[in-house]
Image (cartoon, rainbow, N blue to C red; front, side, top):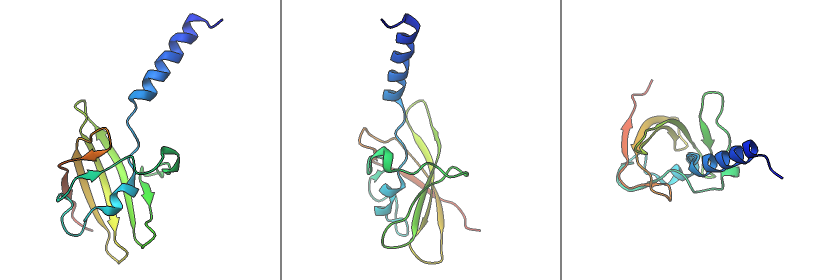
Length: 125
């Protein structure tokens, strides 16, 4: 027999896990035209890999991805507001000496796709 407090806790944890924000997946960003026009097409931000395949954020909060063709793409969550609009940072390196940082804002659909992302490039160092 399960106790009432334990049953309530179990229901609360189940509801919380179903409403949790999916993890940002920088592997999705590898297909974005960062050097040309990252706002030109819809942007997928999660759902490209199983959650278990996405590394935990590093000490600075960045989730890393290294495409097989060189360079890297990092993602860092900033916030998700009450309306479901995500704000996150992306650092992109296409394999050369330049690394570029962006702030991306948009509301992803259930498949993790932002139809009209707003992308602001941050000034380089």
